[in-house]
Structures are given as structure tokens and as C-alpha cells.
Image (cartoon, rainbow, N blue to C red; front, side):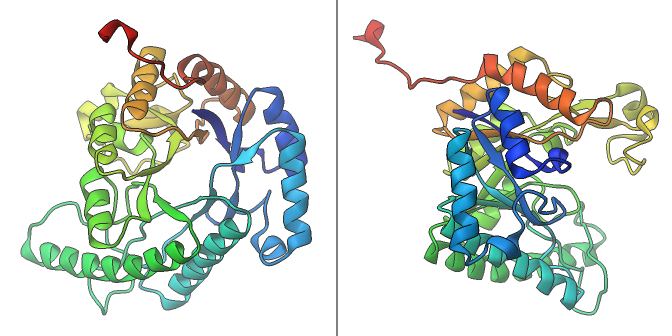
Length: 322
């Protein structure tokens, strides 16, 4: 199991500068953005796609710092009702898959996207209850669109030997493990989870149970190491579906936190152990979005904790059971 870093917090550094900094901290893998919300500061897609020379420079830099790419990231909404925005997101995603294949990276991380509630609507519609009945009808429409789109993407990715790892995220159609399993069952095995616990904590989901649920379905393609802290004083008054601005920290029901600042070291050791139980042995890619600390300090503290939690060797024989 490896410690990785999703690199947007280091956007002020060159790729080589980010690799040098992270290598000194003992990081094994990076997850650079190649479009969408993560941007593409360290791996501009149009500069590297179909360019063997540019790709070789990336390979050389990775080799110099004994690093690998765990995934390419492009988080956007390919199901957006605005055709231009949907096409842009779709192009980003397909080109990310193509680039991943050329770089021999096995995973692209993304969102499921979110359609409108009907063919004549103009904005995405996140539906969280089946009543009144028109909401249930809208949800059925959304799933029909999603299954059609992601079935085609599953074929596209399979032809290129790349897995698609979808982050379960609010304001997206897939935001919890049962929705993730439904999408995978309706499309194909290339579709799976970029398991990010941060969005599951505040929904009241038990992370180790969710890992087991998706792990039993061989549906975890990548993992984000990101924590969340629920602030009970606010949550008791307004619940956790909180639209308060992220930078208004004292008034939010929950905040994204650096690993260890939402849940302690023992919890993260349970997470790592459960991932191993279900056969996941890839990167724990730290996604830093903690507004109470700087990017570098938050990353360094997360790396320090995970370094004590991850297993570096394979399990030995259970000699005591023989």
C-alpha cells in the first residue's frame, strides 16, 4: 500500500518541484489533475496527449524521484443539461482516459455527473428524496441517462485498459455506496469508486462498512485519504445538509480536515486494515482541502499519520493456525 498525494494544492510548483518536495516526505505516488475542477497545473492534457517526447519527460521525472502516477484526475459533469458544458466534460474525460493509457496509468478519477430532472430542464438537480412523486420520476430519468452514458464510457475505457474511479460526491448522481454499486452493475467492471471517505462521514455512513460493501463487489479502483469533522453544535441546529460557505468555518456543520483531525489514528488504521481485507493495495491519495491549515502543513501531517498506518509488506502465513 502506498501513500500518494492529489497534487492541486502544490499548483504553485512545477511538476519536478512537486515531485522533489513529496519525495523528501516519503510519498510514493501522485494523482495530478488533467482537467475539470482539479485543473492541470502539473500535467497539461493538451501538451502531453499523443506527444511521446513530453510523456517521456514525465516518465524521466517520475523515475528520478522514485514516484509513480496512481491516477489522472478530471472532475466535472459530463451529464450536464447544457450540451456545451457536457461536451467539454466528456472530451476532458475521454482524453484523460487516452492519456492514462499512453502513460500506462491504470486509473482516471472523476465524478458521476448529474443530469437535470427532465429533458427540458436547464440545471442539474440533486434529488435526495422520492416524494413528491415527480422527484422519483426525475430520478428515474437521471439514472436512465447515467446508465446510457457510463455504459459507453465503460467500453471506451476497457478498450484502453483503464479503470474509471468515480468519487461519491454530493450534488452528483452517485454520492453513496449503493448508488455506486448500482452504476457499476448497470454498466461494467471498468466503472468503480474513487473511495473518498470525506463525503461519507457527514452523511452518517460508517466507512469500514462501506469499504466492505464496495470491496465485496470489487468496486474500489482508487482511494482518497481525506477526513471530515462534524461540529455538533451547528449540526444539532441545522443538520448536515449545510450550504454555509466553506470559508465560514465557525458556522458550518462540518469541515473537510486533514487526515487525523476529523478521526484519530486508530480509526485510520482500521480504514487501512479494512482496505487490505477487501484486497485493495493501491495508493492512499491525500486530497488536502482543510481550510484551517496551509496546504503544506496539512499534507505533511497527513503523510506523517498515514506513514504509521499503512502496511509496506504483504501478509505472511498464519503459522499460528497450522
